[in-house]
Image (cartoon, rainbow, N blue to C red; front, side, top):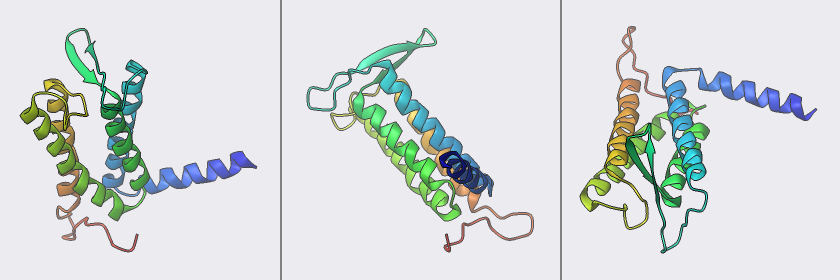
Length: 162
């Protein structure tokens, strides 16, 4: 009984996410951010959230320094879960890209400007700032492509009826 309900809901979710390319790519972006958050917690499970912020730097692929702490992991986890939750509805997926892109670019800008933890909380390094720029630009590109004219002359702007 519970499996049938789960299967029905899972299929409904997958079908909704596959309705438009925008929704699919918002799902992919949300899955990427969620995975980053989970992996960050796995890298250093003793991460602190308080004022005594501890961070961990690992060498990804043996040469790329990646610095994380609890706030950084939570940042990715929350934005990822939001993407997964909003992907099934076109208008919500569009709004997600409209908000997520500038937000990630702001975090990257603050990281570059501060040369250390963003707002004295989120541990990040230069590589992390560059990744946040790429992620922010990817979200904005989805937003722009969603409003581009289609071949039939209409636009792919999400309806407000969702």
